[in-house]
Amino acid sequence: MLPLLFLTLPLQGQAQIIDRVYARVADDVITKYEVDSLEPGVIQGIYAITDSQERENKLNEYTKETLDYLVEQYIVINAAKKEGITVRDDEVDRAVNDIILKSGIDTETFLKILEREKK
Image 1 (cartoon, helix red, strand yellow):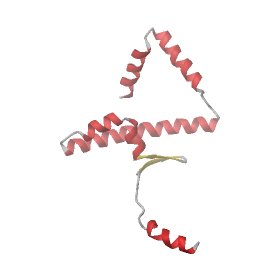
Image 2 (image 1 turned 90 degrees about the horizontal axis):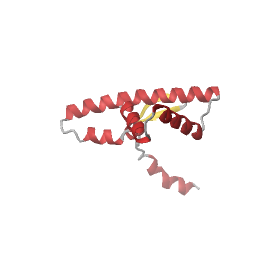
Image 3 (image 1 turned 90 degrees about the vertical axis):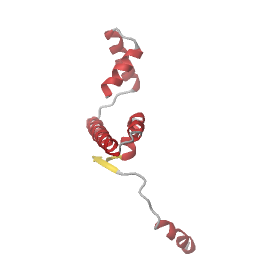
């Protein structure tokens, strides 16, 4: 057992930060990875900007807006958990289908509207 400990000691000194914590909501954390992966196409577009100042400004703006959105979502989810509120997938599907039916639009148009609203 002791020789195994000595073999792992050098590895312990090589710890690296693999993600950055941006926020904590109750027991949940929101990491840089989660912020960046919410809209990967947007992030790719931002990193493609050649002007470093513009890129930095856009990245900061994206990070702030996305972090605000995620914090709100975590607050709602935690409040629902605390109150014992759950929603099954089939309930969500029925509600979405009901909205599509009542609004008289097709699914593709509905998804485009949701995409616009997200921005």
